[in-house]
Length: 390
Image (cartoon, rainbow, N blue to C red; front, top):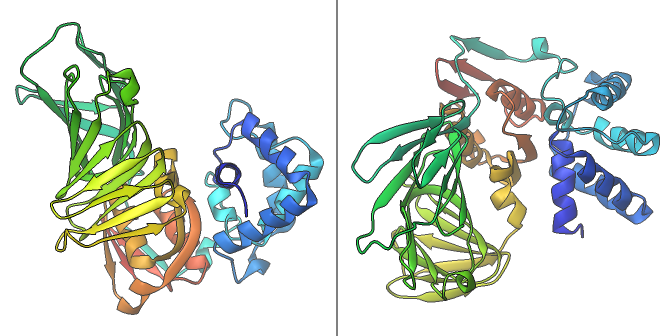
């Protein structure tokens, strides 16, 4: 089994996001012949295989790899080692992850052969943006190139940071951070807790937490990943997240909470540490890699299972990681990020499963072509902001 840390390196490599240091680490791991086999098996199992590999020109792929190694000031730099380059290229050539790796240029995919109809194309890739609602009700738009600053709050348009209050207030003042469809944002709360917010999400939180009192926030709806500042740094004060008839009590940990208003289930996934999930009827202690699934209609019935954590949290690192995910669920994720509506003309396709890793920087067209080339769907159309799957 591939260690979780190494799996993350592989995914970042395949989705064009690995740093030079991470590629060094991956190359070192691949020096072991057993690990090479694990790498090969992982890629074949987790990426949609193209059934028409003859469409691909292996020499063109290698040239593309060579070009990537020469690009300066690029986040991804493929390792210069010829042995690693040839090995990685050989593994990936027969896998449809090619479409994901080279998101800047997928010209080797024969788009003309696809049954695709696109009109009035205006779908943009998601970006960092949010609406900050202040305690007085005033709304502030946060987005790239726009700065916002007060004595306690600073935002560069891509993240917002709260500083601890220098005075003690008896009344707690709350702010809201709302992430629209097609957006994402990062916030550091006044206690140092870090929160990544996914598309179509809303977080309620105090401007400043009171000393020695529980630190309480609310995920009103949506999805958030929390890295909680430990209670030992806050005079033992616990951290509590309320959402959808459940309370999560935290003692310094990292976890993901998915609680969309239009979904029946709430998913709480523990990455590390310890949390207590509390409802009116039950209390469950989660261990790392465990996920609790709460049905909103049956709050006393909680299912706990072990999951692949990275698949649950990869969204915050710019990656969609799907393992045997029904196409209907996958399209819900994509619809939020690209702010589109998806209609299945062929209802049978809704339960067709997809296995693959996609970059959030890709256009929706390229992602749909990738799924189509994997023989998951027959064709699709894009009109205005509606995608029809056929």
